[in-house]
Image (tube, rainbow over all chains, first blue to last red; front, top):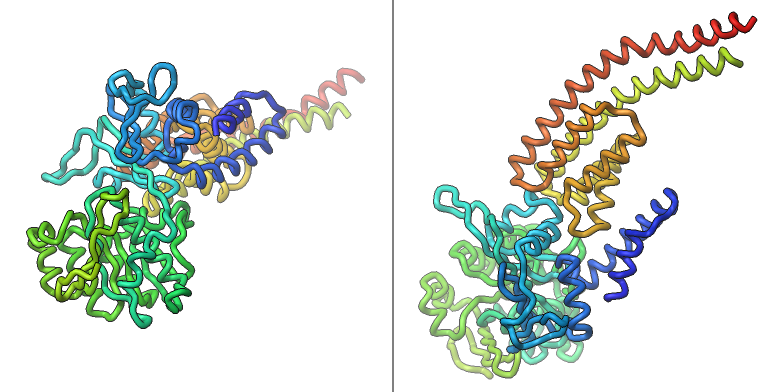
Length: 352
Length: 164
């Protein structure tokens, strides 16, 4: 990877004839586009930081789960439960206080790259405080809020970024699917999980397998509609999903869940509709409406256990309707994606 | 041969005036297309500039395509730097005045770094200024084009007569 970047710099600096340069640029744009597809999050960092990471981390790059950049404070890399930084000798170190300090200019360059120099194109993302980069990874940011009639219009003076690196784990839904599918029928399923426990990864694999079909269960595969409001599930970049989401999956990217679910049901006739992280009252209403139309609904929600969900008024309503037939509880006890329990949604009896 | 040579030079100079006015008109069309990309599709600049460039013909497209290429090649390169490189490529291909270059450069300074509403205002302002520049370029063309078309041949004829 380091070699690639150095070569690129050499190419940029090298002197060539006009026609050679033109040809070189064209092929280089193509190469860079391909790199963006594969390296994803790495190409969304400023060149200096990218080089530092490549040189210090090497093969450990693949293990990173989070990269945190905070103005005037050291760079922090999270690998599972371990936090590391890059020291002055360009090596990974656990002494966070001696780590590489992030400057304001560094953050500004990151913002320039993340927004592709086009702040106007990400107005909604700025309102929400995160954006999705090639590869389906999410970058959250903080700064000073600009309010308009009490509502956040945008965020300026960005002071910190959090790169959350998402991964595909094929087969992670194998344990859950026998509870979710029965006689060619997919049950309405709710996945409850605290942050960073792999609920998006689990939902993605469930969607992929349900869409492709599961030979060992004799399940033929059905049309799945995916409402990917945060572009995390399918990781759509320039119209192409970056993750495997199945043969029969239609994705409505960057659309509000409530509108998106109804649109998909009307336009693409899915048998299963999946969406991530319901939380707003309108999301709950949309799920309710989708549940009435006869399609199966797969969705996730933030929470540690059933009791906690019951305390949130509109989510309690969702549970009280007893529409969800299966409730899956995730934790990080044995690493991300540990299936803590599977409940029958109607009786709340524990099945696993 | 002298008459043909001088006449050809005269025609070339006349064509420069014509091309300048055409370029300014096409640039306004380009900005209108960019406005559409920003207003309706919120397309990020590298793709938006590329698409606009592809829709335009003649030399005027280079300002958009060159800026788009630079933005894609040099990650982290400021938008105004990429746009300036586009202006440089355009001014190498077509003669435009310093005033027109400064209109384009000023437009580049505000490109991409604000909300959609401000971007649209910036585009409208640049279009208006280019429209005024096009008018004055058209007036200069009317004034000078015919003169240079004839002057080349006349000058050639005078030289021939003097030589004879």
